[in-house]
Length: 84
Ligand SMILES: [Zn+2]
Image (cartoon, rainbow, N blue to C red; front, side, top):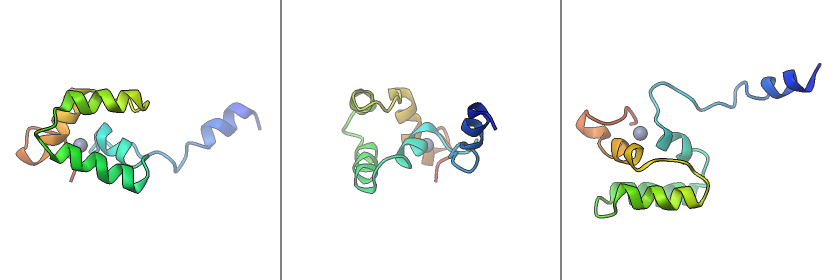
């Protein structure tokens, strides 16, 4: 089997992609539990701007825009993402 097929094969069962889950959710599931808990805490703290969270995430190579963080914050209002 070619390496290309091996590489493609390696994706099976590893993807967290779901149409109902936004990028915030995807990144949360890639982080260590303590990191995810801290990120969640900041996202739920509306005194911290979405753009400042986005900036720190970019610095740590998690490419998530402020707009997506804002959308995730609005998830319970019906105008945001579909995350639980
Ligand atoms: Zn979300």
